[in-house]
Length: 157
Ligand code: PNS
Image (cartoon, rainbow, N blue to C red; front, side, top):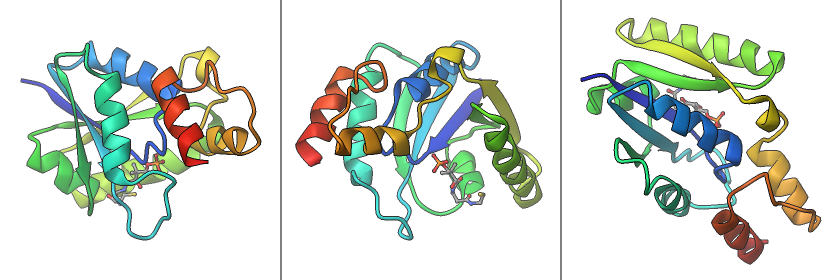
């Protein structure tokens, strides 16, 4: 069985993330979305809130699940029997950062392959930080994040 993990902060999950989840779920038997609970960051949503928002969005994808993790990604992958790490790429700037992380993860544990998936062009400008900025100034969020997440972010801000 081929298992992949798709890690991120997902603060909050965007339509771009969801597109990667849907497409990756077709390539692997099992896909685990890993929500990083990073003690060094101050997220808008708690790790549990982020997981709950993702759970709602993946209800129709039987081979996808979501878990919170802290610590190293390669350890999370190992605990879940995954052999592949999925990363989404939007821009060249993403590539530089992701390339470095992929090499670091390979150095930490050579068993894992990082597989990069290009974002769909219609989502290439979306990021969680931009979404939070738009929400803060009461801009239009339709098309950037799922309707359920729009409600949650409006409650928060
Ligand atoms: O959505 P993000 O914030 O770009 O995701 C970053 C993430 C969670 C993939 C990355 O920070 C990560 O893997 N963190 C876990 C800690 C770790 O393994 N660090 C070493 C590799 S960078």
